[in-house]
Image 1 (cartoon, rainbow, N blue to C red):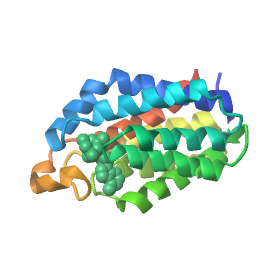
Image 2: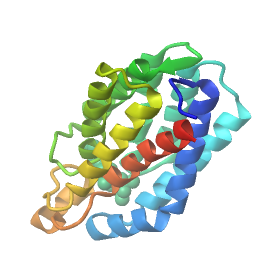
Image 3: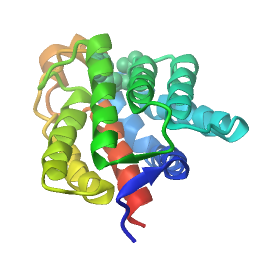
Length: 213
Ligand code: ADP
Ligand code: MG
């Protein structure tokens, strides 16, 4: 059954599914970060999302803003790498944008995700083509907005966003990194897919799995 809006329970299921996917792909994320970083992206994401799932299980939220802000705070405090503050900011800003609601339609969820991306940019200054998570998330949200303008529900918007995220992720391979640890490698960062763009794609995969099943 497809879903026209996303409920609080589904937001929680999305986060839990994201935890499962980063856990499943931990060694792949580690392998990508070994090539152009310090081999901790898999461990960072698993540690952070385990902390998130534990936190939201212990303190059930009653609205989207409280839930997402708690997710963001947990990531900021539990992950040491660049990805902790960046993903943390994404969820914090999503929460602020979503407000005290118990469900979000496709337009509202897209707007919250975009506010999250703007937070990532405010914090990390990434631009298109810098070989970061931005290169998966930005095209995903552009595709999301086009789909919503055409009347897509959450499930349909998430599906086109996932396709665009994965395309953006794969397109990071030839790029020379201009942000983060990978940028220290200069030209040698080319020829490898960005780890953060890969975990970000899993965020959209988790959403598709949650709202389409
Ligand atoms: P660290 O680089 O501190 O070891 P991680 O390995 O967990 O942290 O995360 C690395 C990922 O973080 C990169 O693959 C990239 O996608 C993302 N990243 C790093 N710096 C930035 C930035 N300034 N803006 C956006 N994303 C960034
Ligand atoms: Mg790393």
